[in-house]
Length: 329
Ligand code: DAH
Image (cartoon, rainbow, N blue to C red; front, side, top):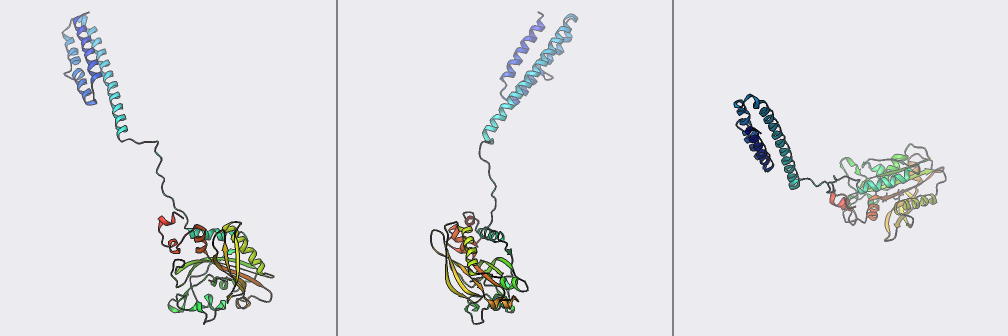
């Protein structure tokens, strides 16, 4: 073997070792320059080939080019390997643990009052009731007078009723919808009317704004028994089969007879609302022939039903809009 080839072999072995030992891509770049750069030893060897005999020249040239290619390849392989392990190290240091549970974005939900209202309304619409709404700013006529509530009735007291400029008022109950819906309508009809009502009242169980749901039905041959039947079914829909209802004789100017109703499922009795047979004078005022038609009506607090159902101690917790509270309900 000619001395030149021997030299080349040694060079190749040296390059191979240096490449394998290069600890970083930067060091590898230097190693490559040492052998393949313009002043690198393999390049120098190639330049030296011109001095050889013609016979040796072609062999040595081919051998040197082959070495050059192999060295290039080892450098590329080593670079790839160094970069891969650098990537792995950096992933391990500040990488993503794909086995961690994901962050679930918070999702909204219905306000408890909306939830209970819809649940109540659904029961009545399934029985053929239509939803009717009335204004919250109301006239004395619809809120009081047409409901047979005389001007000396305590409900009209400024202590109870919010009056607004111009003699109107914030409705104190949803019973105003009875008058608005019945006037000019021919029975039979049945309506359910949920909404906001306002009273001058502030205590843990009361708030100046609260919600009621009113229901009324007018037809021929309607009895108090029909009313009780519907209310029992309604209470079962809301609170389950073991619910109890209690009717206490009472007086409302717009119903005759009238009763207050309490509801209980397991625990304490809850004052739920009022009900009765619509007073004939109210029907007449709405243009409905009270000799031919009868009707029943009822109205109850939505908020108390929700408080009862969700165990909420203070009515105002429902209205303060504190998401931390509402999310627990
Ligand atoms: N409007 C009454 C109130 O707010 C509740 C009520 C009682 C409604 C008897 C009715 C009823 O429809 O028949 O206290």
